[in-house]
Image (cartoon, rainbow, N blue to C red):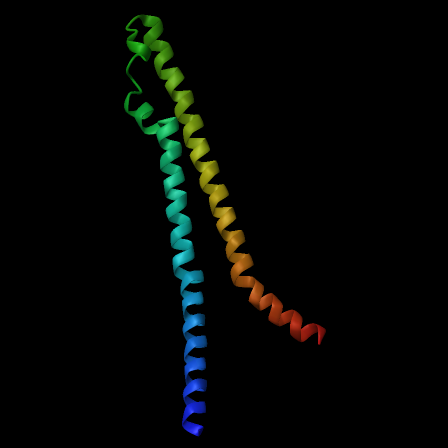
Length: 123
């Protein structure tokens, strides 16, 4: 009977430690990896919609193949504004994704410490 009880307690401790290790692995490695992969996918989708790199590639080409003086002047000005707005939006999106990630890290990683600290302070 003692052998059976020790087997179940050993099995229980192994299961709990395995669960804690998997949870920590998800919090510290898998979760951020999935988050930044999704951020990269959203950034690529934004780039395909806004086409900042393509606009940069054709910066000195006339707009709509208009080779007149007006077309050669307006084309780079229009594309410059589009590039500035596109780069600015990329930076805003990256900053917001980073702030969201840091907030999630603070909540997920800081809440156990906050709970333990409050447990000892109030009791």
